Amino acid sequence: MKKTVLAFSRVSPEMAERLQQDFNVIIPDPKKGDLNEQFNEALPHSHGMIGAGRTLGREQLESAKQLEVVSSISVGYDNYDVGYLTERSIMLTNTPDVLTESTADLGFSLIMSSARRVAELDAYTKAGKWKRSIEASHFGTDVYGKTLGIVGMGNIGAAVARRGRLGFNMPILYSGNSRKTALEQELGAQFRTLDQLLAESDFVCLVVPLSEKTQHMISTRELSLMKKSAILVNIARGPIVDEPALIKALQDGTIRGAGLDVYEKEPLSESPLFALSNAVTLPHIGSATDETRQAMADRAYTNLRAALLGEKPQDLVNTQVWKG
Ligand code: 8YV
Image (cartoon, rainbow, N blue to C red):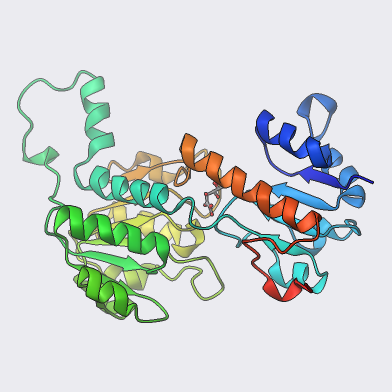
């Protein structure tokens, strides 16, 4: 008998068609009524789930008695209660690697756009305000040769560092739980404590996973350690930054600016950040390119199919669940 798969976020028609070849597929449809009701009605019948951007733990999945695997279309998995899934022997898979370069591109675009005030001055031009040569009040700051601090030198952090070092001659500092000797040799990257990195960097790029340890790791004290000329970039998870503290730091000039792709609460429809010309605010688009989202969907489909057909998925997060 065909197993049943529940899509818990939007999936493409192509993905739906692929899933239907092997499984019964439930895709909640707003035209058919309340999405949460459809989701909850489907759970007891579901063997697999696929999607992203939804909190899944005991409260949500208690009724999913037949659930074998949650295939997340994301590299981050902080929105899943991994302990509960493991306790229930439910496999959790993610989509690492395929989004590394796209996310690093986005991170560097935030470094450039916040340094050179691209969004602000684009709006200035389009508002018809450009009447004479730009003056000092609209000058940006250089990126080339400035010091780039990477908080969390994982695959994405390393990809951002390569862009800075190899493309913009930036000295690279990094902080994190372990030394990366290969990157120290490849890029001349130097290990620093977080406080040292914050004090020495011209650009601070946050690329750490969200955990109890990293929640609000950047708050008033940490922002005050940064240079007044420094810019903070966050392409990781919003709650890593104490957002009210960042807003105050941007308002009072503690730091020069911020380039943000993630926020404490998402989606963000209103915020004091929107009134700040020294904050670039993007809607969580780190992996949002045609090519990368397709690659992520392919990876998530492959993980889901393997798990439901009795094979070990390639990207199993809670490996202890696999009984082989
Ligand atoms: C989005 C991401 O969450 O993969 C992640 O962890 O943050 C982003 O890629 C993902 O694309 C789903 O929206």
